[in-house]
Each structure stands twice: as C-alpha cells, then as structure tokens.
Length: 282
Length: 276
Image 1 (cartoon, each protein chain N blue to C red):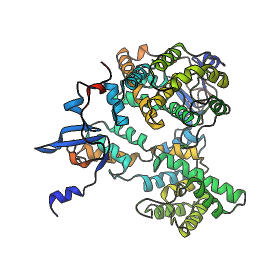
Image 2 (cartoon, rainbow over the protein chains, first blue to last red):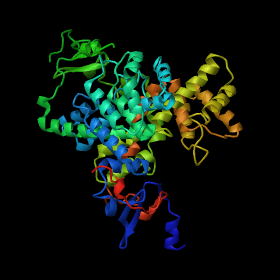
Image 3 (cartoon, helix red, strand yellow):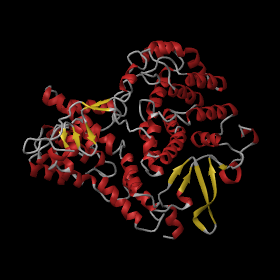
C-alpha cells in the first residue's frame, strides 16, 4: 500500500466548521484556515467582529445586522456578573490563593455551570421556551408546580423555578435595563414577549426574573439551541471571572474575606480528652 | 415575592454538621476529631465516611479499592478522559490541570459519572420491582427498554460484546464474599434475559460495580460521588507518559486529517460586515 493510500484510510476529525489546507513544506502547518467557507486569516481578519465570528462558529452562517447587535448586547450584559457572583467568587478563590491562571478559569466553570444562576439554569429555561413558546397560559401551567426534565440525573434537584430569583424582592434594575434594551434591538419576538409578560410570570412564580431569564429569551431570538445557549452562557460570563481573579491575586489573602466568624459548627464534640481526663491544649 | 430574608439570615452564618478547622488547634470531621478519632483511618475509609457519614467494614473498603484498581485504572491514553490528560502533558501544561480536566470530562454519559449514577438507579429499581414488590424481572427489563429505547445502563458494550473486567471483579467479589448480594444476583439474571433478546447485551463493568456498590448500601448519588476520582491512576499515568515525550507529539494530526463537510469557499461580503 502506498503512503498516500495509507493517509486516505486514516481516521479523521469530521467537521462542518473548519477546513485547513497545508503549507507546501509541512503537512502539519496550515496555510489557509476556512471557517464555514470563509478564509479566516485571508478574508475575515479585519472585516469581522468578535461576536460575528462567534455567531458564525456556532451557526455556520453570518449573522445579519440585528442578530450581531443582539449578540453584542448580550455579550456585554453577561461579561461580568460581578465579584459577588458564585462563579466569579470561585475564580477569585483561585487568584487569591496563588492558583494557576487556568485553575481560576476552570474554577469559575464549576459554579458557573450550575442550576442556580449558572448555565444549567439557562438550559432549563431554554427547555421551557421550547415547550411553551410565547403562550402565556402554557408558561403559567409550566411554572406552576415546575418539574425539570429528567434527562441527566447527575444534576441536583432543582429547588427553585429556573429564570426567577428565589431570594429576590423585585426585578433587579440591571435585569430590567438589559431586557428593555435587548427587546428593542432584537430581530425576534421572544424578548419583547418577555418584556410584555414579565410581571405576569413573576406573579405566577412569586419571584422576580433573573438575568439568565433574559439571556434565554435572547438566545431564542438568535435561534440558538438549548445546548448552544448553555455553552455560550458559560463562555460569555468568563471575562469578569478572569479579570477579578487576577485582581485578587494581586490584592492577596489579607484583603479577601475568610468569613472568620461566619461558621457555626452544630455538632462540635469539643477538644478531645487526654488520657488523664484533661482537655488537650491548643 | 419572598425576598432576601434567607440570605440575610445566612450572611456570615454558615451552619454545618460537616466539620470545621479550629486554627492551630484541631479539626472536626462529621462530629469526630480528625487527629484522634480518625487517626488510624485510611484515606479510602475517610473518603466513604465523607460522602456517606457511615463507616464501612474493612472488607467493603477492600472491595471498593480493589474493584477500582481492576476496572478504572487503565493507563490507556486513547480512552477519552485519559486522552485529555495526555494532551495536557503533551502541551506541557501541569499535572493537576490535566488531572482535573480529565476528571471533569469523566462526568460523561457513555461512561463515568452519568453512567455510574444511572446504573445504580436502574439496578435499585430492578430490586424494588422484583425482590421488594414481587414483580417479574423480565417484564420490568423489557418495559425499561421500551420506555427508554435503549438497553439499560450497565449492560451492553460498544464495539465488542464482552467486558474483560467482569470476570476478575466477579472473582474479587467471590473472594470477599460479596458475589451473592441481591443486586449482583439481579444483574446476572438481567444479563441472561438480555442475552436471549435480540439485543444480546452482556453485563458490563459499570453494571457490576453498581450492583456491588448497591449491595453495600450506596445510593445512586453516593456511588456517583464516591466514583468521581476512580479514574485518577490511569489519568495521571497518561499525563506523565505524554509529558515525558517530545512536546506536541501525542497523535499529531496533519491538516488533511480534518475531513471538512461544510459549505464551499466563499467571500465575506461588505453587507455581512454588521458592526461598523
């Protein structure tokens, strides 16, 4: 068998996203890279924006002007959940302890993936959109006695209705600001429907809408699937985690909360007894 | 709206029975003093105590340790989670990043975390249906296949219809006297049922370890949590192997090994440039 024939039979990565042609002098170095048919370094570079490229990677087609503007707005809205957010706190814990830079980002993904405020909450909201669309009666029915899809059992039980803050008093100002802005520029109707029906949905759940709820409507208007939305939500919230982790790395442990007086042990046996009956000394 | 009352109550107030560090003095672990009451415990005993709050007998701890030696410690870098560690080593990244990335990847549907949890869940439901409620096992298994449109998790194996790990783990279970538990017996009966169907599926190692663990009283969630680190020996071996060789040489792919199936070459048009 000739060497070329052997190569034809080699296992391959199959992709609709990416194609490469090799340099003449090295089969392992790409001369041209194409993303869904577009020459990335010979054509797109300098023409395409970051969010347009992001859209192209996932959807394999360029966004129109409104879609790009909506994704741009969403990316800004999600980029930094702030240093009190669970995922950003995880990243900062990496930073403050001198963890590797990658460790900080990986740390953010743990809580950032969760069903409370994380990407799995967004995924569950996407599932509601898939089953209820823009039908208020169906939403009301779904949210009343909400049961999550039993598809992947490793996730803990959901103890709140996805998309709504179990500890909220009223809809937070940034959530309303983002919803209003994105609904205004969206090419779809989901964000606008949510804007019109937010208060009714909040009355059904007894809790205010959260940012993930707005993001889900935006992803629906952009035509992303539930798993694409989950992945993008993870990705788009990382910039803040990264920046805050570096900030805390430089601030150091002394300026970072340890919650020194915050832990109450309910079953403390006390210091162990010495063999002579006295307590061991610290 | 219920409001932030619970957050106000929890602010600087984490109430727990799991444990705490009394700086410079002592540590309490689930109500026990770490330095005295856990002084003679092995890491494996402590691991199971952390997850379940229960202490297991030495023979049970031996079962868990040895079955995970036999069935999940493959130093085989082509296996998907191990490959993450090998790639990390080849990229000259760190061992702990490789290990933690590979462990994260082990939370998978077709093997690892999701499969482990589903296996115990299924075998416990099978026991409930038959031993506890007197139902017919074959009816239950066939109904499960009909509803889920797949062979129950813990049975069947892609590519080859056998699992080389089952005989040695059964031998281990026999040596330790754990081969007669109700879940293991059911798992073997289910294998017989499935062998006679058109599915011809065998008991795989996930199904057997799930049954053995269920017989030791582990819940699906406890098994999932306990098994989260069981791939570590193989993972670390694969990292070290790749780290010791030339960088970037772990199964290098030439450009042509990306088989493109998408649209043809096209130009980004001016009207496609959306943000001026």
